[in-house]
Length: 214
Image (cartoon, rainbow, N blue to C red; front, side, top):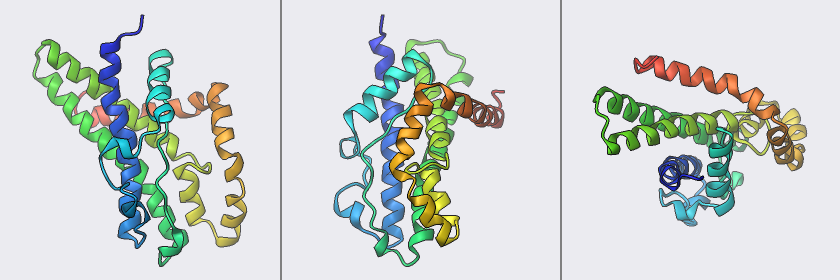
């Protein structure tokens, strides 16, 4: 039977992980000279502006409950590279902002988890906080690692496009139409989980060790 209480606890870190990821893209784009996201109200922590009901809520929750692995997406933040002084390099920086925001959030939730564990209390409220913080750590690590895969249209693919020589970047950019199909195929066949699990485990283990919870 589905535990609605746990779903509500999962919902908070999942939504913040995805919405702040998108807001980070827009904020960095604005700082680099493109105000498209700001003009559309996308540089905000208001999840309503970023949520895709299926990709942001339903899919991640169902997957983390049934498989322990989560995959989700929000409405992409619009970016106009023509407003950048260095379009290729600046797009890579905009792309990097998303995974970096997830890493920062993973550290935040790790701090919350560490503090709640060290309180040595077993109250219902504190146990709920531990559960939510644990989900916050893992969901942000997963989103960071998934998005750093060098596949377009994921952030890792855009970062790779930004560092490749222009000629090769143009060739690689042509793979974007098939990129998400490839990600979904890897996901449903279980190959994606096998690729990501060692990387996710490594980041999680190092964070736990950093906070003395190894």
